[in-house]
Length: 138
Image 1 (cartoon, rainbow, N blue to C red):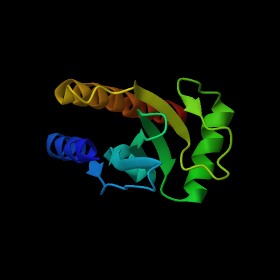
Image 2: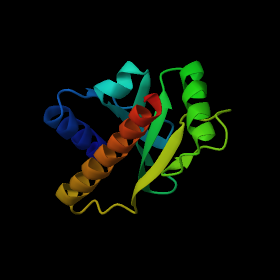
Image 3: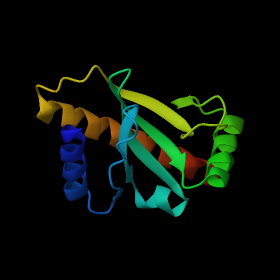
Image 4: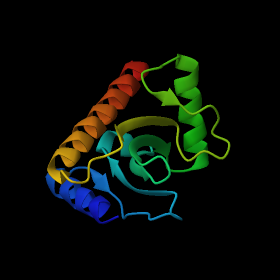
C-alpha cells in the first residue's frame, strides 16, 4: 500500500496535466487510483491503476465516470471489434470497460524499475485508447 502512494505521487508530479485521484484502499481486494489524460477526462472516461491483492498483480483499467458512460463506451468498443485489450464480458457488476495486466508478480525489491514499467505500460494503454477513440471519431 505504501508503494501505491509512492507511485501516485511520482505520476502526479511528473504528469501535472493528468488527473490523479486519491487512493482507494478497497476491502483488501484491490487498491487503486485514477491516472487520466485530459482527452479521456473530456469524454467522461478514467483510467485506473489497480493492484489486485489476490492475484498479486498490477492492472490498468478504462472506466466511465458513471454507469451510463460506461455502457456507452463498452458498447462502442464491443461493436467496433477492437481487441487490443480485454473488453470485460459484461458491464453488469463490472467496474471497468477494458482491462489489461501490466505487471504480473511485481518485484517490490526494485521500486525504481517497477515504477518505470508501470508508468510506461500505463502511458501506452492510455495512448492506444486515445488513438482508437480518435480514429473512431473520424
